[in-house]
Image 1 (cartoon, rainbow, N blue to C red):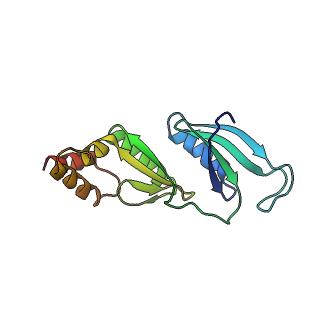
Image 2 (image 1 turned 180 degrees about the vertical axis):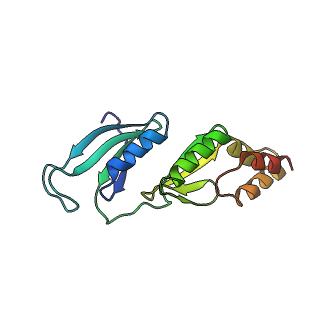
Image 3 (image 1 turned 120 degrees about the vertical axis):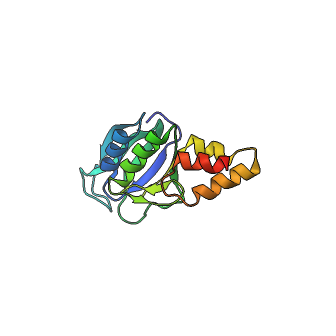
Length: 159
């Protein structure tokens, strides 16, 4: 690992599967080194995949197969800034359609329980609009959505 700071994500024996999915789904993502346990450990046996080095959109990560003790929560999420509706839809449906779950306001979870915010840049611009009324309309529209609909956000922003 080259990076001085790496995000470590805990999995229950599925770190390699998750890393492969992220590498196939997100640009600038890849699976790196796969490290096998040199001896038995509480969550596995000698030779099992212990850790996986991978990147998600250029962010260095380490998947740790630590067992069932800890689960992912919404306290940590990847926020992905999308350029248009096509990219928003592609990423949303890749996550949700691969065993994940829809949530609200552009949030969803992958099949491993990791939270993702699929956030169009148009949404970020709308809720930061210098016109407080336009920003309010945009955020109120977002609060009614699961996957973000850029056209609906822009229509709300315009009033």
